[in-house]
Image (tube, rainbow, N blue to C red; front, side, top):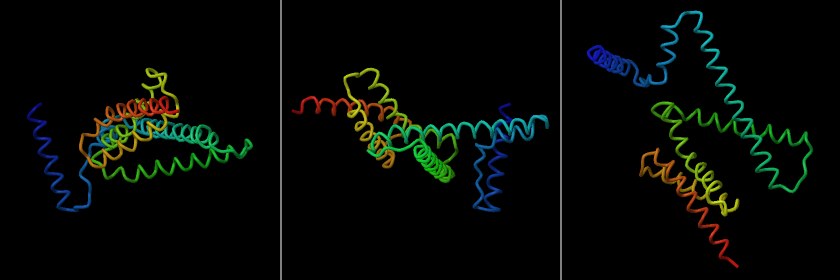
Length: 201
């Protein structure tokens, strides 16, 4: 098995070199195609279409639910709570659809830059590491530090997220550390802002 694995790795490297010699613009990264290659070449013919349909349906369902959730949250929790004007149900629905469309455009933008990364798993981990730490910090503050009010948490999360984006930009630590740093920053900044508010006259 070890000998076969070594032989396979050598053949893959030879194939990559041959591809690069033929056309240097062609990507030789095949990490994202292992599962699809297995499905297309080793599963019975009747199951291939079914599995591909399941994969596409699951992707569409998860994407649709995420976009609808983002649009609804943006509409009701951010836009309508911070505007004086009163909207009818029809106008609210239109605003919700506009925000869903906006989030869809943002998602397409992320998809367009995904080819810049080594593979999709790495991209998902990087994006998650940038934002999950702040979300975890908000959750911990809400559960543990109940004296910290919503305004302090909100501004603490914003400051924390900006710092995390800067840390990622200057690339001083591995991106997985951003989870821990983001949570720690959110907790610290929120607590500090709440302390300042309490001490102010």
